[in-house]
Length: 191
Figure 1: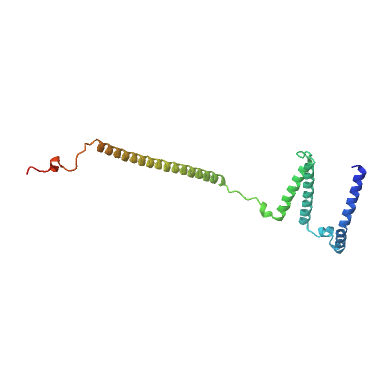
Figure 2: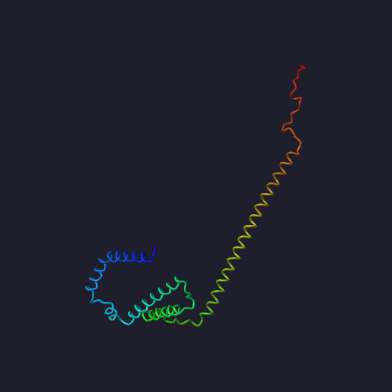
């Protein structure tokens, strides 16, 4: 496409957009007239100093972060840029405002004089408890291993006894259970 055709297409798109937005624009203008007495400047001036500083710092922070995002999108190096300092300054300002609103949150809590020895003692106790748990665990394992070995040796002894009995039975000569001789089976026909 040529440049003239592109411009013509853009003009037609803009005129269509203007026609679509016309009803909305008239509503916005009517709203502005109806609420003219509530202009932002007037409502802003009615606020207290803390509220004004909150609004101003929030607006500044939003604008700076948007600018920072735009720079990132355009591949601008932001590591050493002034924008970082400004965003940091605004973050500190938020903390200052919060200190005014909630001073108890930022009061310095006095540390007791014996806090360090307590920490040392509690860490030593916890280390000692850890060592005891490890020792108990290893003792339980050793006892279980000893029981397992004892059961295994008992099983082996029983198997050895069974084998010995089996061997003795196999080696023993076959003895009749009753003392019966072959004569007992013969008929006495001599009569």
